[in-house]
Image (cartoon, rainbow, N blue to C red; front, side):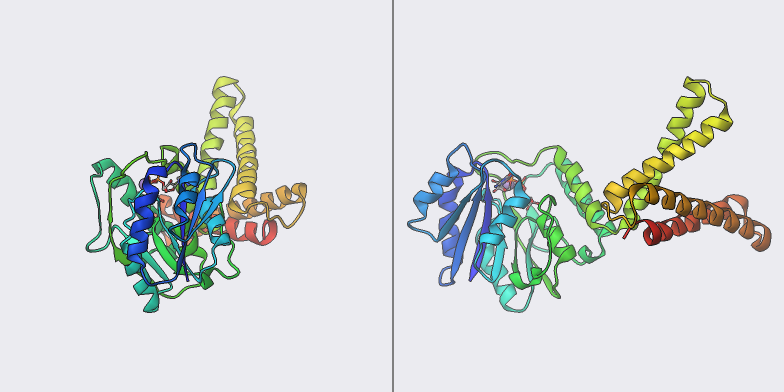
Amino acid sequence: MISIIIPTYNERDNLEELFSRIERSLRGLSYEIVLVDDNSPDGTADKARELSSSYPVKIIVRPKRLGLSSAVMDGMNAARGDIIAVMDADLQHPPEVLSALYERIEKGCDIAIASRYIEGGSVENWSPLRKLISRGSIVLAWILLPRVRRVKDPASGYFMFRRGILDGVELNPRGFKILMEILVKGKYDRVCEVPYTFGLRRSGSSKLGAKVIVSYVLHVLDLSSPIIRFALVGAFGTLVNLGVLWFLHYALGIAHEIASALAIEISVLSNFFLNDLWTFRRKRKAGIAGSIFRYHLANASGIIVQYAVSVALFRIIGLESLTSQFIGILIGFLVNYALSRKIVWW
Ligand code: GDD
Ligand code: MN
């Protein structure tokens, strides 16, 4: 059986056409619709109840607006099918594509994605800016998430998959793009894409606003390997370091020797806390004080290695000064990261 998960928020006027087109697309197949509504003020759930006499609809109503991804996950938990589909309610995901997705699953694909970005797919009436943001967000995912690289439209919200690929897999309900979660964490071999045109919204309005970009980037970073977050924290730490130095030396008039030492220490501490909370999600090997101490050791080792490499490259190999220093920084960073992982976290 196919379970079609449809998150809704104020989609009342789209349901009738949606259900009837799903029925036409999947005629003859066994399916259920799992509608996950966040208590829409427009009465979406009531309308769905009314339609449930004619269509196989299961309705889940959550108390308030809790977000798209968690709605999809709640829907999956309630679903009985061994094949799961996820789609929007607003008809921007044409229901006719469901049968094509199912065909691909039957032919052996573990995940079938309705794709805007393969031959034959497109988006209708998007501004150049919206197109750029969409493509840019996908390129970011390709850079940071190796498993996503084979997929042309990993940001799609319209897809079907065999339920078994998520056995024993824990998805993050705060994750912004549920497909991305599945592509990074799922146990699958074959991913297929089916082209479709992301149409215009019929009624109601899009719920994806400006803070969506930030959530998206954070989600991709959360799914990426920790060394990337560690490097970003390090880069941010450099700014903290320079900012504190500026404040202590120029604003407070503290001598450079003291201001510099304090700035270094404060940036090491801020890096520690950011890495603890974000990069490694508090998976510490020791208590907080011990961890801070060990983190200093890892940092100090990184700096010693950085210095040794830089001097060796310059004096022994004869490389140019800045090049030597830069390679030193890279190797020092790797040592710092490896040691942090070995003695501080995980
Ligand atoms: N339950 C619930 N809770 N549903 C929600 C919520 C929520 O907080 N927010 C949105 N929805 C429902 C909408 O009612 C709709 O059915 C679907 O989720 C998508 O929301 P839209 O507001 O229409 O999003 P969009 O059109 O900007 O973007 C969609 O299409 C993109 C391209 O395929 C999303 O599905 C994106 O994830 C997708 O990338
Ligand atoms: Mn939409």
